[in-house]
Image 1 (cartoon, rainbow, N blue to C red):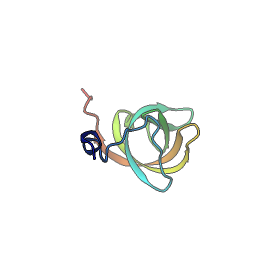
Image 2 (cartoon, helix red, strand yellow; image 1 turned 135 degrees about the vertical axis):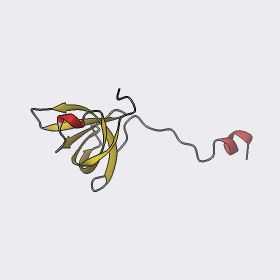
Image 3 (tube, rainbow, N blue to C red; image 1 turned 60 degrees about the horizontal axis):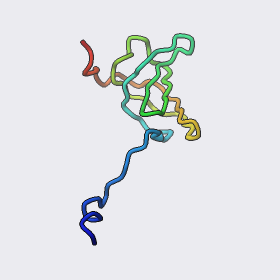
Image 4 (cartoon, rainbow, N blue to C red; image 1 turned 90 degrees about the vertical axis):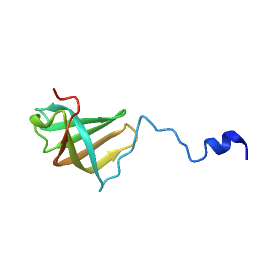
Length: 92
């Protein structure tokens, strides 16, 4: 085994289009709120996760979301707000 293969063993690159598995819960930061859709929006890399049940005051907070649906072809997911789990480190 070469030095490089030993060094890089187990390494992998992260994708900018992560997948979300329906039935799982994830913690994300809400970036926006769309009042017309009554949903928050979380951006996970280039993946967009729409969060029903989120409110406008949840924007900028870390929230737990139950993933309900994910479309890998366009990297769009839909989930339901569970609870606030933290504040943004950028809040000021």
